Image 1: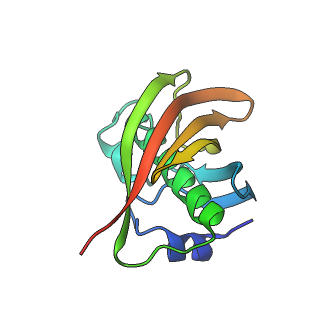
Image 2: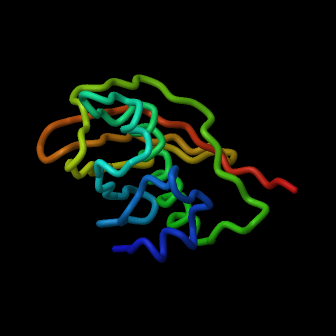
Length: 146
């Protein structure tokens, strides 16, 4: 388990783009389960959509990528520093199955498929209750900047 204070130490993201509220479970080198509480106060709901608020699919993918980053840091057992940036390298087979609305709890299950030459590949699934909301294969990489 990891609370928001520990997450803030690992991820550079801040409001309004920090999309992981809690780590529910982590198995280093294998998988992570995270949680995003979706509230009506999210800034994107103002325009997406005013009469029927729905979480944008790209933000579900971003929440899964942030979860993948947390798994990577736990797997390598090295916290990121100010010169390390974690980037998307690719998204494959993204599918959106259910709208995510205010009041939902989005649970992300991310599994590490492969880590080679600084490129990490993950299978990611986001669900609300027992309903699949989004799934994708994500590729991410860490780069030293500065």
